Image 1 (cartoon, rainbow, N blue to C red):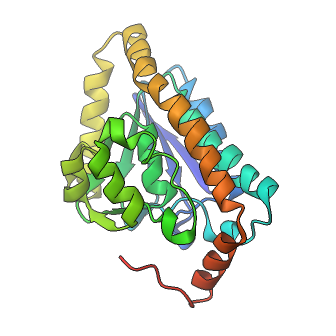
Image 2 (cartoon, rainbow, N blue to C red):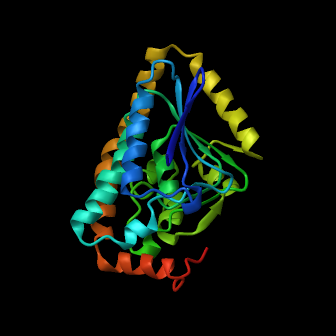
Length: 254
């Protein structure tokens, strides 16, 4: 299955396993990811939810470009972006458990945007980060809406307007991630350490604190940002650019 769940005594690991496709997500996989996150958020034994990718190259490259290239009109775009990606965003922001992103590799497009929905993020040093939506003719949903509050207006503008690729060190300086580790073993150790620290808190207090942290994200991102993303994705130019990239006729520069 493309979305794998592994549990231990504290953590539910939700793992995106589409290595052959850069751990990208089409409409069906977005729904599966949202559904499994919701289930794990209700698991009594789970104190912390962790989202990560399979392998050592990609966290996730976001919404599958094949699906994007096949969008034909607003209804398709709405199902893919507002309901599909938006469903994942809602499942993350609505979780009663703290959510950590274990960034095992590159976080591209919606993969970087999803980091707006989590509480904490730990990344391997080699990871790269970019939100190149504007280069495809789309509007990034989280960085221009939440970014000014989370990382500052100038940092948000740099990410959202340029579509550039950033290093882990650069995004840590911006406040986009919390900790950098050297490798996958270090990633697991650091996530475990954070989970253990969180588990020292009283469960009700942790849940309520997490809810307050998440509430501010809901209106600006899930409604305004994803609405803008869906409406921009419905334009023919987006499918054209995605198709050109898939055919090797377009290169997205760093």
